[in-house]
Length: 437
Image 1 (spheres, rainbow, N blue to C red):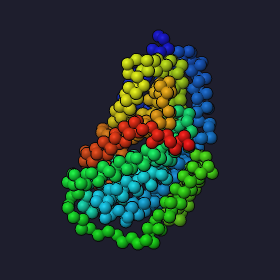
Image 2: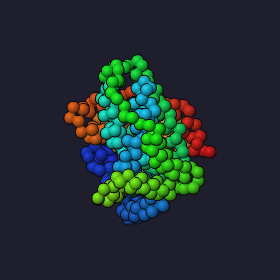
Image 3: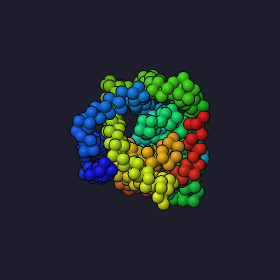
């Protein structure tokens, strides 16, 4: 067999192994090791495996992963999410569907200090959904808003997916973070417009009753300030330090984790054994992410050795499909895979194949990364996988709440994300202007 045929069979074998239920990291390592052994020999395959394990994980940059994960977990347990929602509820409760918009804004702010969509879905399913249903919103709409706006956690920096993409594409993490600001604000605006349109033209989907008779908790100016100050301080510490040039991404993660720890200690949120449990969870998440990065790096080198990306680039770019035809097919494939597997796995499978093609097509890889993250996040809302949907179902612990109802509630937000994705394709500066300053 030729190297290209071996690489092609390797891709097919990986898809089959994932379909059969083999963990993606083990599948990628197995396929890559065998592929290199067939293209060259077993000795080269063993040496490449050792080199990848050393080269791909020894970088100082990778310390950013556990630091941002720990910061997100500390912020989650310290009650910052509830405080954020309370502030926006107080500011927007008189607006039509104001609690839905408050949820979007609260998720956007929470995203800027966590970077994990699942954390946002967990927090706001327990904070926002009960409050919205108490004020006459339908459960379907309430859970849909939380699921839809939770995707901002992976778009607005800091973002775990942005870090993974930056590593695989060999781009600057700081620039990827900057590139996420414009699209994150765009998504927030599109979500708010979607909520206002639903409230005006399809009120039956939004409200159970035509009049809100439930009382709002009294929240004076002093209370608003007290709840907002920790959030603003943490945002200023992490984002201000990063974009002001005081910290690199790893140092910003360390500062953020320390700031989140201080907030959690001041609020006495870390009971006996709680901090140790958070450290263990941080370690588990970090090890799984870094193991997947290691596997994806070996898979990428196997594909480069086989010549498959080069052949694909010639097929797409010199044939009738063209660069933007390739882009459309790539985004559609990501959205389709999002129905079946998780976000990081999609990126690790497709990027080693797609990045060389995108580079030869002349695409800005920062812009390409933003499109990738938005398309991947759509998969968090689509059946049958829909990780955010199942997270909300699990967090709510309500036997009367059906998964199908949550999926129906997310449909308008899936449409909103597709609109935002199209706008970023048509107007690349939305993603690139800050990153290129």
